[in-house]
Image 1 (cartoon, rainbow, N blue to C red):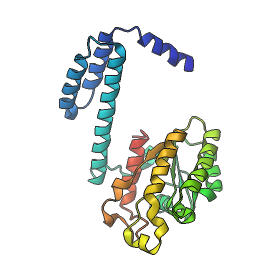
Image 2 (image 1 turned 60 degrees about the vertical axis):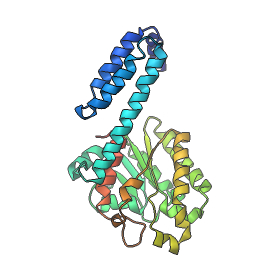
Image 3 (image 1 turned 90 degrees about the vertical axis):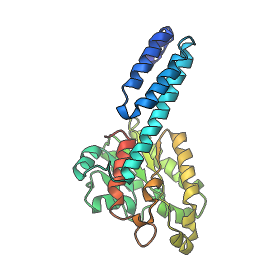
Image 4 (image 1 turned 120 degrees about the vertical axis):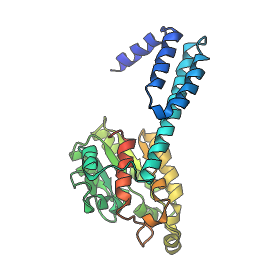
Length: 265
């Protein structure tokens, strides 16, 4: 497989710039009508590169792809927040069929509310990533096509402001998945923000931002995808009275965003 990829790249270097330019324009016009104005601007940008070297055109197409992907993600987030793009219960089950989600009590509520069954949701109330050996073994035994992980709220108390041990424990479990399922993509969810009154009662919970930054860096290190769900709880009405857990309305939004991020829909 690696040889095929290398070969296709060599061929690309001898394709005339005009051909790459044409392909780039065709790609842009394949986007939705709602993006047509942006597409027109980007086509003009590519045409300016018509007489330049192929690497410049390739980079321009890559940059435009990134821009359009960012716009699409922003629109998807807005749709989810506004409840206009949320999956139905049936669609959620279809999207996550064959996947597994591993986590603590916040994850466990997915099955408790009936969105997914325990053959997809492997969780335990009060679970921390360092003590999740059994859950990870179960997840691996299910031979999933995608693995989603969601830990951190309980770990905030265990590691008391220092994410080093948390990341070390996460690394051990992620490596366990990678060793057993080397071709399966892994998605790591952020720790949800904690309400101020809950932090006042337990200051260790206030370090969630530092832990999330450590998680994001860890995902870069381990070639995993970090899913930042902060935007889903900007409205404080999404929280239970304890200021840590979230209400039922959060879950279809979260599941929809996970599915979109992983390309399951």
